[in-house]
Length: 247
Image (cartoon, rainbow, N blue to C red; front, side, top):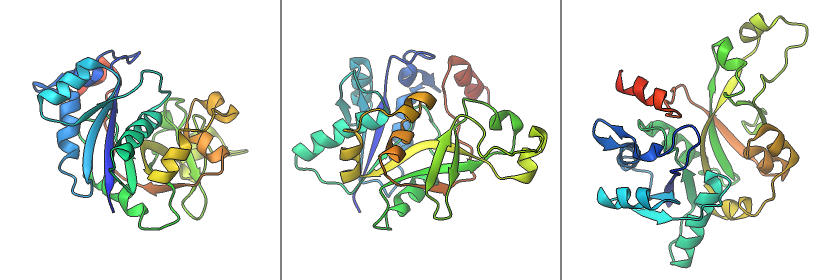
C-alpha cells in the first residue's frame, strides 16, 4: 500500500499568524512535524502543502518537500486534494492520503499506523480517530468536537454539542452513565474518494456546525472511526506554545 502523508500549513491563522514558523527549541514547528512524521515507516512519501512563500522557503531550507497550493481552499482536505491532483498529473500513484495536522509538533506514530491499517479493509473510504472524554469541561465545550458511531465503528454524526443527549439525567451524571468521545482531527482518505470529496458543495449541516466531515456524511460517504487513548497536544495560540515550552 502506497501512502502519501500531506501536512497542510497555512500562514494566515486567525488566532496565531505565522504558526508553522514559530520556533520550538530553535526549530520551526513545521520542521518538528515533518521530521516526526518522517520516522513513520508506513508512509511512502511526505510533503508540506502551503499557500505562503515563507513556509515554502522554510521547508526547503531544512530539506523537506513542499508544494505551493491555492489560497482559496476552505480546508486542509481541499489542500490535500490539490496536491494529490498535481502528483497524479506527474505520474505518481498512491492508494491512501493522510492529512496530518501541522500544529501538533509531537506526532504520535501509532495513530498514523492505526489509520493506515483501516485501509486493509477494501470498503474503507475515509478513516479518522476518537478518544474517550472524561472531563465535563471537554464534554460541554463547543471547541471539542464530539462523535457518535454505529456498531460497525462508522461515524453517525459529529457535533460541537454533547451527543448523545441524556434525557432526564442531570448533566453532572452524563459521563458516569454514558461513554462520550471527542474527535481527533486527523483524516485518511482512499485516493479516489479524496478526489470526489473536494468536488462536493458545502451542506447545511456543515455550515451549521462548521465541520467539513458532515458534508461527507450528508453525501453518503462512510467514515471509519478507530479509538485512541493518546492525548494530542495541538498548538492553536501563542499561549499554547508557551505551555509546551514550559513542560
